[in-house]
Image (spheres, rainbow, N blue to C red):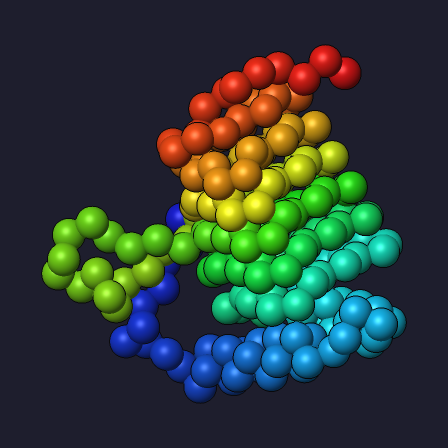
Length: 179
């Protein structure tokens, strides 16, 4: 997958406006109660790049850029979900994201010189009918196959095949799912 590069030393007025808009939208989203689903869905549709039917985002959601997140029908992100979307995040239909999950397209160089200023992003793709368990972390460039389950607390550093349960740190296949 192709890397997107970004330098904090080159924050243009346009980038700062986008980040301010995202900050405002996420604060509005997080201020609404679960009973205000219609209003929450309107903000999700403005914040994300594309949204299928019936999206749900629990309290305390965070992302850093605007319209780089694309979700299918029946998307559900539980409480405390963070998506660092410097690059695109594409999530299929009928996906469930557990509480305290981090989906991070962004990374930094290993060498200390310039580490804090230079950032890269690699897209993340999550297939249809995926369940990501609570406290899991999905790292840049990962593709998660359809029907997969990421066990709670997993750190996913490499692609996950279709129809498997994957868990651990680093995550590995625990068992196959019969479909």
